[in-house]
Each structure stands twice: as structure tokens, then as C-alpha cells.
Length: 131
Image (cartoon, rainbow, N blue to C red; front, top):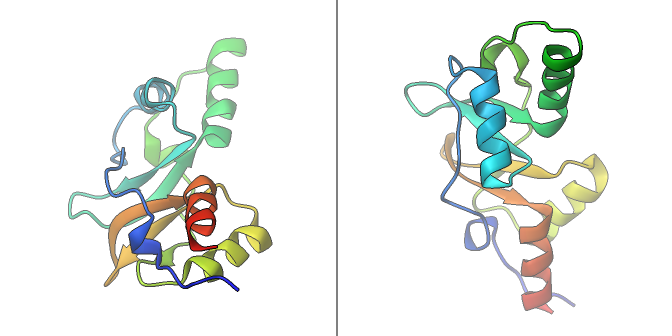
């Protein structure tokens, strides 16, 4: 049986985050440069308002390069219905959530504020250390 572990012990706290008014092409460049598959979108107060993923960006990149369309800002393309996990949630519970939902990452909230992000890889590392 696994020992217990909490999301806050394994999450990434240093995040790349986008503002809703950032140009989406700039956001795509950041995703590529930082080698990440998505990032949270936060407002001026630091509240989580969405997520921008590689899948969202692929549609934009295709439209702008193949169809010569113009790109807008992050707010136009982000997913605003975002599933989150609590910083004090159990790693085992979050692992089960990853299996059910199929997401690559979840924003982590503490008292409704964005404090980090946890990925499938973070959970794998946690489960390996908790054996």
C-alpha cells in the first residue's frame, strides 16, 4: 500500500503563466521555448481564468500559417472551463483523477488562489517515492 502524499509536496510552483491580453503567437513561442505543453491564464489579480494548451495553439498555428488568418490574444483561444485540484489533495486521489479525466496537467489552488501546477509526470515521481 502507498504512503500518503499531498499535491503541494510535488507540484511545480514556478509557472509560466499568460495574461488574457497577451498575443497568442507570443504565447505559442513561450510554450515552445520553455518546452511546456500548456500554461494557466491569470488576470491582473492573479486569479485563474483559463488554460492555454498545445492543442489550442495547434489550431491557431495551422490557421495562421496555412490559411493566412490573423491571430488574436490568449483570451480568444484559452479554455475557460478549467478543472483544478487543491494543494492539500492526496496524490493518490489526483492520480485517479488523471486516469479518469485524461488531462496532462491541473492547476493547483490553495484558498481559491493559483499556487502551482501538477502534471502526470509529477504524479508519477510522487508515486515512485511513496512506494
